[in-house]
Amino acid sequence: QAKAVGRNNLRCFDPAIQHDKHRRQALRAWMRDAIAKQELHLVFQPMITLETGLATEFEALLRWRQPVLGDIGPAEFIPIAEESGQIVAIGAWVLDQACRAAANWPATFTVTVNLSPMQLVPSIVDTVANALQQSRLAPERLTLEITETVLLENSASNLTTLHTLRAMGVRIVLDDFGVGFASLSYLQQFPFDKIKIDRSFVGDLERRRDSQSIVKAVILLADDMGMDTTAEGVETSGQLSWLRQAGCGQVQGFLLGRPMSAEDLPGYLLSYLASEGAGEVKVDAVK
Ligand code: C2E
Ligand code: MG
Ligand code: MG
Ligand code: MG
View 1 (cartoon, rainbow, N blue to C red):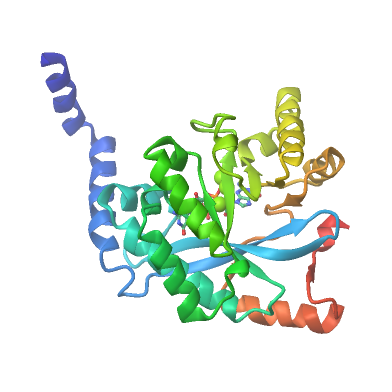
View 2: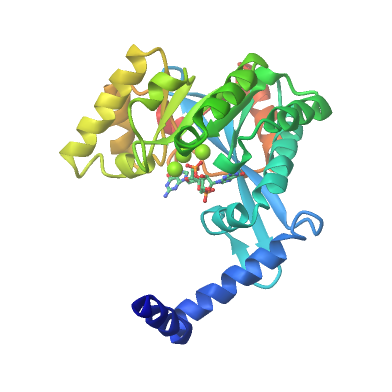
């Protein structure tokens, strides 16, 4: 007990930790008005199907332009939003904006939204239904990404919610597979449409034989269970050709396309339609 108090006292005098604490407190307070003040926006990153070289799916990623501190990344502010419960309102806003954006794209393109574990409560079904209804986006054009944490707690209720969403026509993808509390038994709990292989494995593909083994095994496993795979964080052509050889279905990463703003995307997609006539984006790096 005394030791714990002593440590707490020490913490208060450590300027770096104190600075972090103040920053978190400030972010948490500022976040309350971030939607109303229009400081949040979405960017969209393409995923490319290796067989065709075409991008038809875009992942919505949240951005916060804070007037005092500048751009703050989701890796920093999403955990704070989860802690304070603000993720529920922010997540609903993300769903709404993502569906509205995608409704402006040609119908061959679909949108993918990340769901925080805290959002996966029964009311998410209404939130998703509302976002689809308001935007008039077909449910088949919406994919939700969740992490295995969702299956860790309150599992029975969460599974029911996932099945309800799936029955609406929305696709469900397991994000960041292989890190955190991942266990293969989660794959038996819910029939995911797709597994995203975490970028930590992808980044090591050219350096580590064991990362290659893991990625190969995940691709085979997913394929055998009737699921698709996306490798995230593809940055080099070496990684890309390795993934192609290993039979990975889809790739996403800075090599293939950076996240783009909602304003730029419709024009970009339409100019592709005009030049290719195929109705899909062709990404040169894949060829
Ligand atoms: P994620 O869902 O795994 O998203 C992929 C992250 O990897 C994105 O970071 C993306 O910009 C980044 N990325 C993509 N390609 C590359 C690459 O080639 N190299 C590297 N180094 N990074 C790449 P971002 O946008 O900073 O998002 C980080 C995480 O924050 C996301 O990971 C997701 O878990 C969370 N997040 C983002 N937007 C939302 C949201 O709207 N709601 C929720 N709940 N979480 C979100
Ligand atoms: Mg994701
Ligand atoms: Mg991911
Ligand atoms: Mg990730």
